[in-house]
Image 1 (cartoon, rainbow, N blue to C red):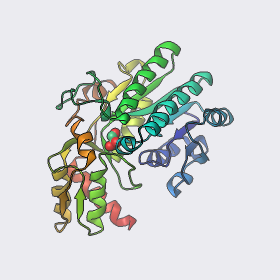
Image 2 (spheres, rainbow, N blue to C red):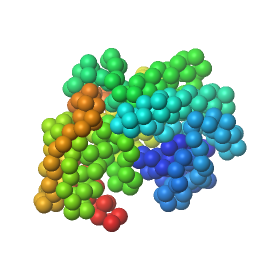
Image 3 (tube, rainbow, N blue to C red):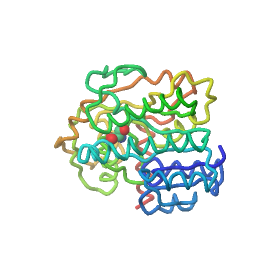
Image 4 (cartoon, protein in one colour):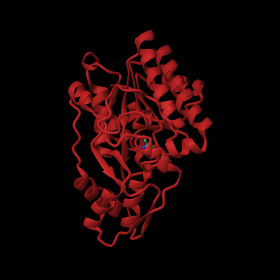
Length: 313
Ligand code: SER
């Protein structure tokens, strides 16, 4: 990895990924981009530029000017925001990806790494231990764009030999930046409310079970996938997970440190999204091909989240 472009660098994952890439490649070799004002964590670890991934000319110019050879494409509209504005999700998630892949092909980029999601699975996929390969019939626009995006990666790999890799993230739990517009955000919101001493009204029911992962594991996963020798990768897209938790599991875990925390449940349109996704996904292919292994269990994640949020306040 030499010269790295990161899109969506101000997002939940991007903002933390930039620091790790900077530690590995040096600040001047990380070109971070977003349509938002960069937080300090991004500005201090990279060269930041405004970039809307819909602007293929600006994207191409940045790649040429900075002699980029690796792209981490993190920009996306998440599931709940995507249901509020499906056309925007389509444009950003799919046209944005096509722009990245086209520029990567034309500018001879060495590697493109971009997240997919558990949202590629629809209600007909097995709920437990959903395999890496199974029918993809998502019922959200976010899921539709991520599933189509996976097919695009496969197309660019086979047609043009572009090294492009992806991993299907579960809900990501983190404390540095607020998550934006996802269905799994309730879990992060619970920690924030609990540390602030406020009760929380959860938008999915207590027994809603989904796959989750702490941010440090999410960063490790994408960096390990990026670093894996191409010959070891039998798939282009990998399920990755760490935990399978209900909303109630988070509450009980938080209450171990903050016993006064209270949560009630008022499911809204996001319940249907959550109900269409797996409870738990099978990530044995990632474990086999690039030694994927998470480090955080629920208790360690809760302790770290509460500590970090207290420090930040
Ligand atoms: N965390 C994402 C969302 O809830 C799923 O990939 O939209």
